[in-house]
Image 1 (tube, rainbow, N blue to C red):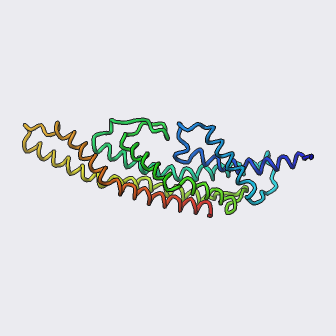
Image 2: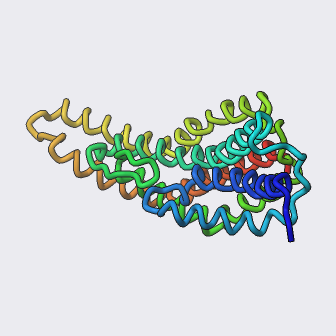
Length: 257
């Protein structure tokens, strides 16, 4: 069996471009993009998914892979994959923003640890929220839904020099406001309650300075904050679920699925 150079390049392009879209998604998607997960695992998962997907995707336009149009197609596949994972990264950033606000209100801003996903130090409370949301994301098969949508995008958003438009990019930028609104909704009940607790300590310290109320108030604030986190954990996960649903709706709009 003999193959010409053009046939070999076409065969290579039919595998490389889907691999670029899928592997770019694994680079940026939460849970799978953590530094503790070896890069070999992500590459192997992308390779296996691509092997399954390539036989069922529509035929790719006859474009030379080592040409200007081939370079544009490669860039488009990377942008599509990275944008898909980046939208979900913003969902998990909601938990970080809310957790940081709660930790600072409790006086636990100094208690921090390295976030394995971002590599920066965040308060422990925020890390607890991120771990809880990661477990919920896996429990509802969010990763499988994302892979399914990405595979379907090869039909609705075929491999070509034209991919995301400028309006799609602006849709992602506009949706990024959900990071702050969602984090505010998540933290507002606990932050408001702790604010009133601190106000009451201030009034008591003003009325009776000899009591040294702020020396006792610090552990009380932490204890009340812990109780409030335990009481509101259900509503916290509800907020995360709503933001996650909105994120998947945006991804569906971007991928035309």
